Length: 131
Length: 117
Image (cartoon, chains in turn brown, red):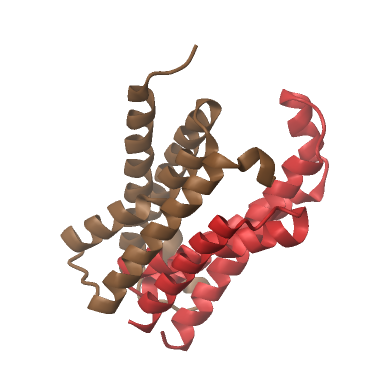
């Protein structure tokens, strides 16, 4: 049985949501455990930070969604879906964390997104030949 | 980027790439289906190497995020697509088609722009 396009769109959005949630939790954990030092006390502060466990939960959710998508969908679009979370993380970091990119950085972000789309297309087309 | 964020970024890239290549190696060399496949993978070091690499990467990623904004961090981390692809070329003889090279170049130049700020 071939899943409908709704299956893919929903899967794509769920994957993005899990990834974005995970990265947001990571950043909040890092902020709360600050200041960073490459030592044991910092690691202990991180381990006591509830946000870290949100990040792990987000990872697990993303992993399960990713595997579910891979089962039916071609690898190219799934590859794109799993990397285009960059876009949603950028939106969330601007909205909730009030981060701003400089103009050259925004140009860089656009180039990166194009690069991901190009790679996703190649993975779809000649995947069997390229492996 | 100054020195400490740069080192954290390097650690993220190295351990992410090693982890992904180790997992690929684990899946590549193990025979069988289903449970037998997992047994075969667990009997070799690759799977475990990959898990250790991802645990270290997890910590390096937290360190990196302590030093740079989230938006910059996720953009800079996309270079892992380039390093994993090059690793796949070296270790598994995966082909670098012109299209893949184009994608790699776009991502690499984007990462340079973001890194320079």
